[in-house]
Image (spheres, one colour):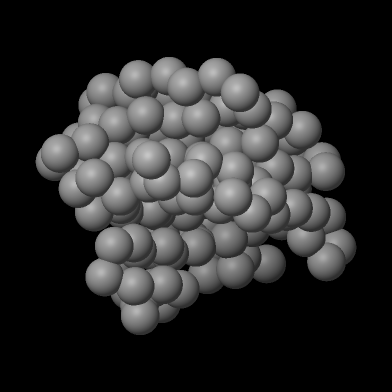
Length: 128
């Protein structure tokens, strides 16, 4: 592993390139990081993620870089605005909804256990 790395999110693969409503880019591998995960998530205006997720071990923090929206944490819904930071314990199920101007998030996570530890929760935040 190198002593440092500099990468640009836009030089990485969009994991949701087929989705017109979302963009998702990860940099953990590109940065050769063993202790830190960092990702970019862009939601189109009004988009709500009906599927939530939680982790078995990883704590995460999300930074609202642009736009506004809401986050559902277990059974609670909270408003978000630019520069809000949301820290989420591993067991808390989370999903995001973009406001009228969209939502751009940077997510930070801790060490990734072998094989990953993300758990999906279908129909966590159904459309109204």
